[in-house]
Image (cartoon, rainbow, N blue to C red; front, side, top):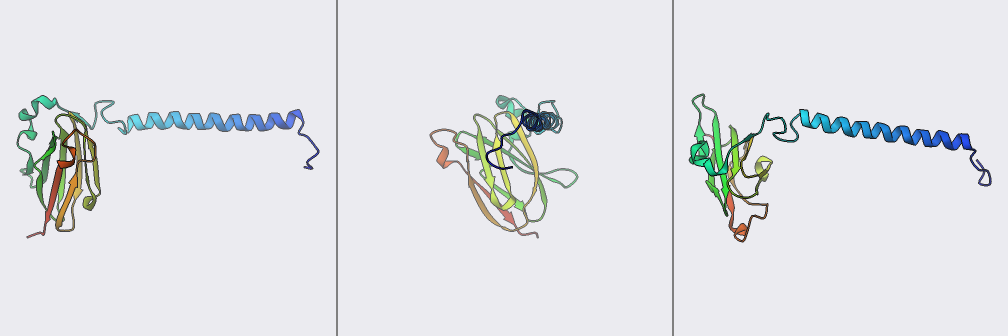
Amino acid sequence: MPAHQTLDHHTIEKYELGWLLISVVLVIMLFAGVLLSMVGETVPGLFGGKSSYIDPAKLNQTAFAAPGLKTAPDGSLDAYIVARAFQFQPNVLRVPAGRPVTMHMVAADVVHGLMLGQGNVNVELIPGQVSTFRATFNHPGTYTSQCHEYCGIGHQTMAFKLIVEAAK
C-alpha cells in the first residue's frame, strides 16, 4: 500500500479484532497454566498433596531428630538434613557413588538454601516444609556448598560437604 493511502474503518476494525482475539487466547492460556500448575503441585502443598509440613519446634519427634544417612529395611538410602542457625546437620554427608539417595531436608528456623553442583541439586529450605527429592551421585569426590539464602549474621560460615565414596 502506498504511503499516501490510509486504512479505511473496516480494515482497522479487522486488525483490532485480530489483536483482541490474540489477547483473549493469551489470557485463557495463562489462566489454564495457573490451574494446571495448582493441580500438578507446582505450588507445593496447595492441595495438601506431595509436600509435607512439620512443626519446626517438634523436629526432635521426627526422623530429623537424628539427621544423617539411614538405610531403610528394603535397602534404599534416605538422608535427613536439617538447616538451622548457621549450620547444616550433618555438615558432612557420605553417600555411595551410583546409588540413589532420597534426600529429606528441612529448615528449623529461617529460610536456607543448598546447592550441590555435582548432583544438580538446588533446593530452598523453608521452615517446616520438608523438601524431598531423589538424587544419584555418580562421581566419587568431595563437593562443598554453602547456604545460598542469606540467613543472618553467621551466614557465611554455614557450609555443607557431600562426600561421594566409590562403590565397594
